[in-house]
Image (cartoon, rainbow, N blue to C red; front, side, top):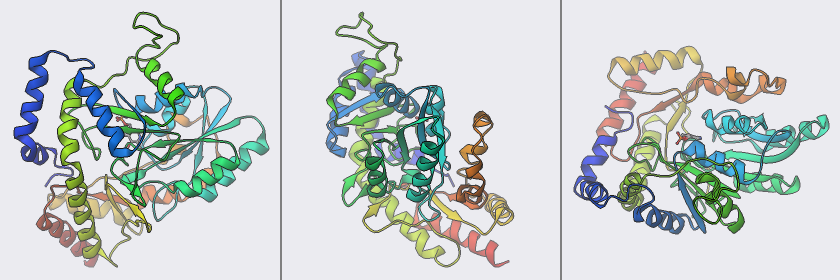
Length: 375
Ligand SMILES: *Cc1c(COP(=O)(O)O)cnc(C)c1O
């Protein structure tokens, strides 16, 4: 069994995929070919966001947003303590200071109450200027943007939506990657919408920010390619990846339906056995992960071993909260010691899930899991 079966997806899409890839090879427009612009248009239509700018990966997408907003030394950026490293890394890379915020134990997403407290303590200390909230759509579920927006508005903060795992999710029908002042996603192969390598995109309704991001992704270009008005990056999506993504985007809505069936089946079979992921009313997940919570680290680790012995892969996302990563050693943030994120890192386990997983495979994961719990 595969944790995320990308080959099964390729086989399902093979005729169209092979044609799309061979067309790119034959046409020779390997950089910024017509498929890139067409994909950007399709992503804008899908999310309902005015400007979509593709780039080299999801981390660069976040960096491009930081550069467009001029986030730098002296700025406080509020980041969930429970996320992939890149969500916080990009803050430090620009010289700003990530302030780690606790997450909700039901949804794994940023806790509004913890954000309020973190902002209050930064203001009280008076050393950093609160600028920005990085809200992560963890495991495919959009963050609680109504609560976060309310807080951000009161403190005059921007919201950057890290939708690397969130593409395809929604709140009351409004699509993920449309909630942040700027939003980003990743097309890393294992993400909900993945390509065959690295890729990413930035989403915004703001014309000025879109212009800046377009410049930053091409070495800070001005009106023409060889006029450079700012220091930027070389961060483009390959034409080949854009062609691959166009084929995948056509299949995407059906895949989201399938992966939701898979998640419902897990929830049904595991109900009352473990703590299942919670999707609040009105929210929809794209199920980048199906993450359960066990009682403690010992039980979680033994379960992972038992599953492995039955040929079932599982993953710990994430084993360490941001504030305990060595790279952030110099940021002493004592408030994090009591965070829920510490416990989550000990108790979470992500089970195999993807649009092509079968009901039989899910049943076999659940029966191994239940027999472990019963022994
Ligand atoms: C994967 C991921 C990223 C980074 O995306 P890359 O394309 O790998 O650079 C950023 N944030 C989160 C939450 C992610 O899961």
